[in-house]
Image (cartoon, rainbow, N blue to C red; front, side, top):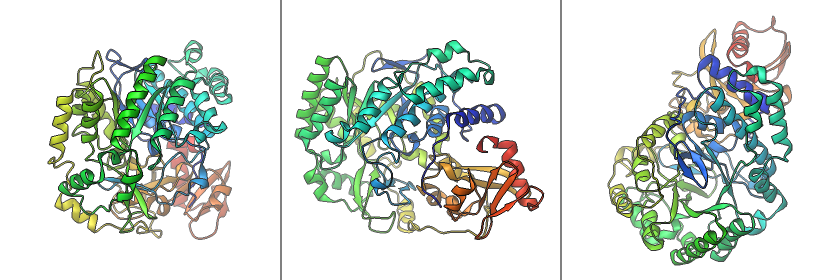
Length: 559
């Protein structure tokens, strides 16, 4: 198995969008595609939003196809996965790296792509979302927003790679990828029914005017303030700082966790001692509010970052994992009461169908989700969340409702949706460790529930029809071996290792041990045992012929 993702070419990205939607009315296997109400929109940092629903910087916003899937589901605020000067193997990400059975855990951090490669991927996604919005009538092509996320220190953000990333997404007009995407669309207008040259030429090069700063646990207060001031003053961005839950203090967090049933979590007290303190944060926020007003941009905070907990039962590899919290609403109340109700707050960390409308009504937005999309139904949940937020009256003027925030704070402490139940606790205690349960000898699922398709952030699983019925087809290029599908499999198995895999070339196939195939013209490379064997179509078994036929018929864009 290879754990290195291969970004799609722009041509392949567009081809899959067009073919899949026209034949199946889905986009990257998101079957519940949202058509927005173009008559209802709000403003955020000078740009229009059809809906304040967003997807947090993370696995769902790293590749272009993920971002298209987010938009298709109903998200209109895309927080692009964090970039920094390190990438790839330098990050030291152990795999599997994501587990979201109940509360979410991960051992990953920033984008696995080089900052400039990530920029290229986000620009391709920018064009692709514009195209699907216009071509399929999914919404106003100018009423969604991309938001950059960068880290983790000033030197890194000022590095050539990250600075190029910031500049390229602020104004992409001079980038090679922007010109290539535009040229491809103009040269292939015959592919479209509702898109002409005027529309393509009108696509703006100003991709992002907002940025969220993510800092490592233990980053000094003065360093955080210097970075934010640099982004505001020197770069001219509307800037949000992602706050860590350690601001609440160890004693408070430990008490809340214990009361809500998370007493089994091992929380490192040292992290609270070295992290930004609450009084430091308040002083910093007030300083940056003054600076942002002077520079004519917006400053706010993002609540909240993940919380480090110790790995005690091999949930994931390593020593520390990061939890997506469900009990961190109090942070919003404290900051609002201390800094004032004019503070702009965006939200993540436990937002889902049970609270998202109430969070919005409290004046907190955009609201981004991640963990809930890693759980059964996956991206399909976005449509319901979009619908819930659409039903709320959009604000004319931004202002926190501290009374409603207080209600959220109090209710979450006893809310069964966020407290750990005995049933959930038992499942946690009986969990399968990160090594998983492999089932390599059987390419078929006992029950084709398609959960692995829905929960994959990279859209690396799909299904095809064969002589032996429907089977899962794993797509090698899109997989980074995050492992989330193995934790969600009811069988159990490891879909990204055990199911038949489509490879984009024989060379890619040689780097993996998965059973699968690659198609190169009229040559077919197949591995069902240990060796890769080349066949003509006539030499294939009936089963493999049906696999090839199905791919060509329903997934031709993979070839």
